[in-house]
Length: 294
Image (cartoon, rainbow, N blue to C red; front, side):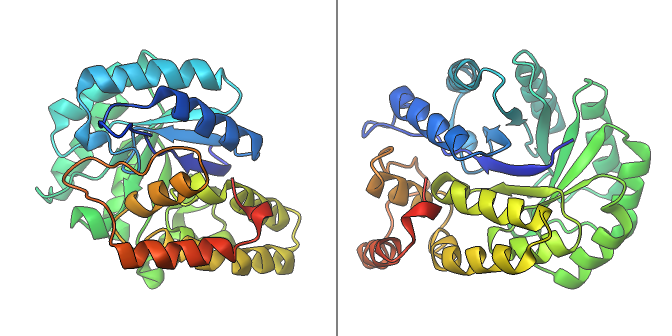
């Protein structure tokens, strides 16, 4: 259902901090031209947490119209408040997405019964759900038993975006669940490892910059040319890692600015990246194969 390469799209902002719709149009066209399978709107990389409801709706209207069903659309709707998550999901469904991305609630660290009810209520709204598991940001790590209960009790969950760096746990859950749902890689720097664990694909922030690379890696793997896939990954790896030199999406936006796609502006509480890190990013970008870049 959610196979392939999905870009967690950044939201271009003007120097004044307003949504830059001209740059958004260019970024979307570059992504689709690179052969991606879908776009995630209003995710973490989009800085959705800093946008008000009117801004979100305006962005969705523009992006959905621009995409025009050429690739799949996933909309991020998760928060750490069930009521707000449901409101976000209802608003998203007006745009007829292919699915919604719902992160496990952060900060409150819900117990299993609360977590299951949170997702069950989302499922009642009718959209396919991608459960987003990113313990490094949420402080909540799902055991295999809790994930099993979630998938059993909330049939609307059709996929998991897995962004845990505990590869022993990732392996355990992939072995159990990857043939039951779409098990999606959420760690750009571990894409080959996830593909070897029968991952359906990837939702990637670095794909804002490196969409052609991720598409080539995925397609080579699908053709069982794993050596070619790994060679491409090796070429892209320095820049993939560089995208996370500072908190996402600061570096992604800086690199997009160097590629003349949009400005580097991020919204507080994120700030501009360090000047020394900009020099490092420039150097890595200069040595990256242009065929791998957006």
